[in-house]
Length: 247
Ligand code: NAD
Image (cartoon, rainbow, N blue to C red; front, side, top):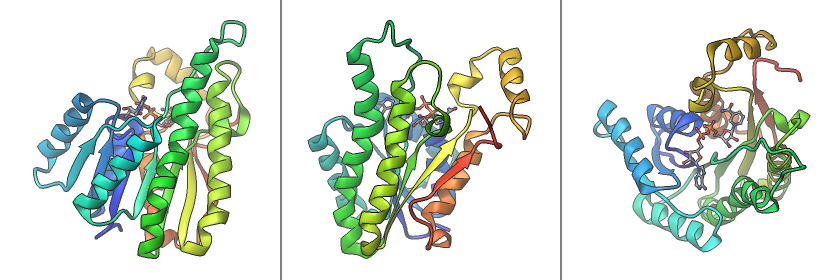
């Protein structure tokens, strides 16, 4: 589905991001994965190469909260592969603080990564995509962008902003044939969820109509579809991948 396409995946070293990288590679794309440190980037690449030694994948660790660093990394990817067709803005951190103890610097940190980096990465790749005549940008939002959550207000606030960027950029970039969509995962079995006691995961799963939490690969499949030409008339969409979770 993604033959001859080049993709950038931020937060591609583990969890949902690594599943997106693997799914994109399986569908024929060449991939640049971004992580916060070269050590974790190299670990992810080693894992991918152990499964497929000739996988077309490179890794970088730009500071996503700094536009100059993002711009430089995107230029490196463009120089390496010659183009960028797909951007998966997936890096993100969550929050749990009560507003009574919330350090404003901690609030800002969530916004810097979850919101600013989405804008920075989109701004850096949009000119390449415009020049190529097509592009697909997919942002990882969250089910909390529909319901909020009862603590760590920066996290849902950041994901509401991601939906706003998605819908606004879809309207702005449609004329350049650049599609912009968001995927809204529900509770997904990444390291964080895997570390929870089984009883806790079971009690979360019991509230979900499909009766279980999601797997990273199931979220990644939505990225593959939205990245592909099969989704050629889909832009500005917020696609829930959450088993119909209601809060
Ligand atoms: P994770 O913690 O397993 O992975 C996060 C990724 O982001 C890692 O690759 C990490 O390198 C990168 N990252 C973290 N801080 C960074 C920084 N400062 N600079 C650059 N990269 C950084 O998380 P995950 O669960 O796979 O989440 C991925 C995305 O999915 C996030 O945007 C998250 O908000 C969203 N999400 C996750 C769930 C879930 O249940 N896991 C649910 C809804 C949405």
